[in-house]
Amino acid sequence: MNMTLMRHSMVRGLGALMMVVSAGLAMAGTFPDRPVRLVVAGPPSGGTDFLARVLAERLTVIWKQPVVVENRAGASGLIGTKYVQTAPADGYTLILGHAATHAIVPAMHHPSPYDPINDFTPISLVATAPEVLVVAENSPIKSLRELLAAAKARPGTMTYGSPGIGLPQHLLGYRMAQLAGVDMRHVPYRGSNPALTDLIGGQISAMVVTTGAVMPFIKDGRVRPIAVNSAQRSPLLPDVPTFGEQGMPELQQLGWFGVFAPAKVPPEVVSTLNSAIVKVMSAPDVRARIAALYVDPVSDTPEEFAAFHREEVRKWAQIVKQSGVRAE
Image (cartoon, rainbow, N blue to C red):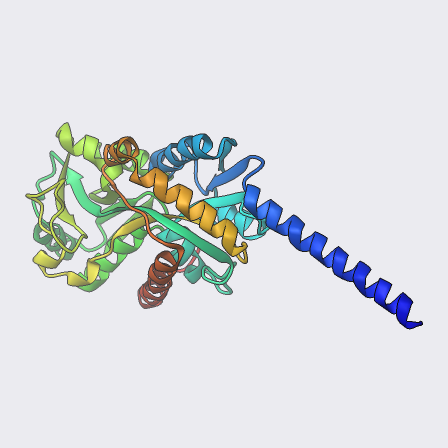
């Protein structure tokens, strides 16, 4: 090839490269230019679904593109989370994850079905909430001490319910019994409401549940809270002592919800996603709607969320290992 042809070839190659780069920048600059899916790895009800729909509604307004909530329930969140893990890394498929989907469930499987850190891109935390240990209002049990004493006196007869296997509420109850050295049987349900119904009806002895799911039942006097797992007493339940106050500081664990995308989403798209979510979570009317669910609306940077998430993965992997709980 002579020098003239070589120069023409190089110019054409450089031009093609510039076109690819320009197209990529244009795509990033216009994101999103089509509908975005926000996956909930659970049924169309409950706290996660509510948060997702509030977020999607406002993001639709900001982006002028539909943000569609897509429920993909099953296997304690495994099905929906795997779906997002394998989606294109373009920012158009997101998941509203939580401790179960992005820390506990992968630790309960061997081998793990996905890497909660390396297979996802953290975008922003959106809410936190404590869990509450409750008994039925007509139960003779008035405190954590009385519950554990009853379990010790009658091994295997006391039960605790949770919204499902592998959820934080399940592990909190499991660790509570383990730390106290008592035999309490776990009864898993498909969500909080059926478990609360059975608790009120006397089919189970106690239940670990999020504030969002249980506060209406506490307010109308159907269940009695006896412990919360926050570091300090919850402003929602100022008269209810923490587990730490009652001799179990190991049970401090805050529930959380956050938005993730598949791994390797371009940084400029991550920035666009994060800034929009922060804007939504800063809006007073959105904060009021979320607070009405008895959870605390929050937001942070992708870097802050990534650091928080890494610590959660480390913490829950240790808890799962110590508890011996495995996926069934």
